[in-house]
Length: 93
Image (tube, rainbow, N blue to C red; front, side, top):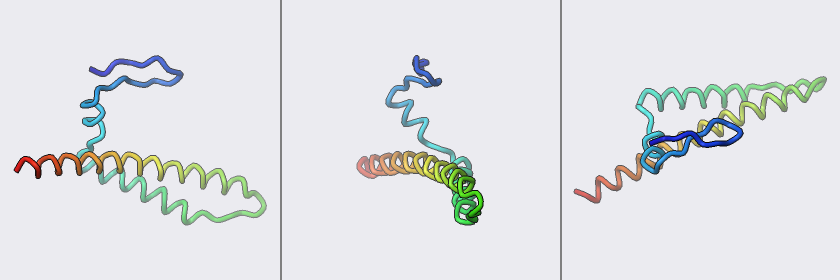
């Protein structure tokens, strides 16, 4: 059962099964996550550098890059688990 962890941020101590269950998205959640990643990546590609204030570009680029990378981390953990499940099912057949 998930229990709160004492950290500077709010975190949970999860069992191995809870970690797995929390890594699997529904089909609609997965598609939404992909859309969010795509939106951030496209915005990042369309950023224009203002030579008068390059810090704005750098800050926005870093923010969007973080969103893309975080979404990719969630997508990767989901896909890794789906592959594990499919491999396990194939081995049982």
